[in-house]
Structures are given as C-alpha cells and as structure tokens.
Length: 134
Image (cartoon, rainbow, N blue to C red; front, side):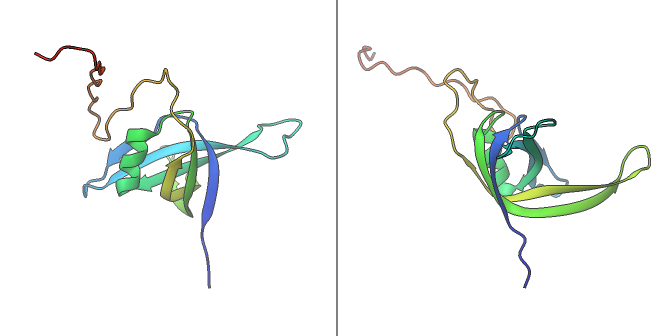
C-alpha cells in the first residue's frame, strides 16, 4: 500500500492566479510560506511551497483567499519534469490541493477579492435601518 498525503499550514506569498485549460477546467496556482519550528542562524526562516488546485477548490481560492492569508492545504505531492526556455531539463515538486481552508479573517482594510472569472464585484450599498424608504 502507498500513501501520498500532505497537510500544511502557511501564508500565501502572492495572490492566486486562475487559468482555464483548453478543456475548460479551472486551475489556480499560488505559493505559501510555512514557518520553520527552529529558525536557522542563516538562511530563510520559512519553507516555500507551490500549490495547485482544480475546479471548485480553485474557484474558492480565487474568490476568498489572497496574499497574506493563513490557510491550511490538504492534498498530495506531485512531481513533474519539463524543459525550460533555454533547453534545460527541470523537475518541480508541488502540492496538488484537494482542500484549501482560510484560517483567519481578511484584514479590515483589505480590498475585496475579484470573482474567479476576473470581474470585479460591485461594493454593497451600506445598510442604514433609519433611512426613509421612498
């Protein structure tokens, strides 16, 4: 039996990037920083991971989660090989997320996220219960 499962908690280092494949599937890519338990004397005090999510998970991430948000990612590790533009062979390991959950609230002064299709949502009208109706 084999098992390929990873669960990590970290902060998004950049806003998610949504793409639609030629077959019409949504995919989002982002990266997260996970603080190290023991900070090294030299070098970074966090590990950085690339994450990819598909379908409804991709839509959720794009609509509700942005740079700096604390998230949990539950998925599997996947490696793939490719050739870069200079003809060098490269290998990358990334997390393919099955579930992504926001673990904190967005900042009060944060700008609203755009919908997953790239259209900005209109800001809601402020509700005033004491305003006269016409």
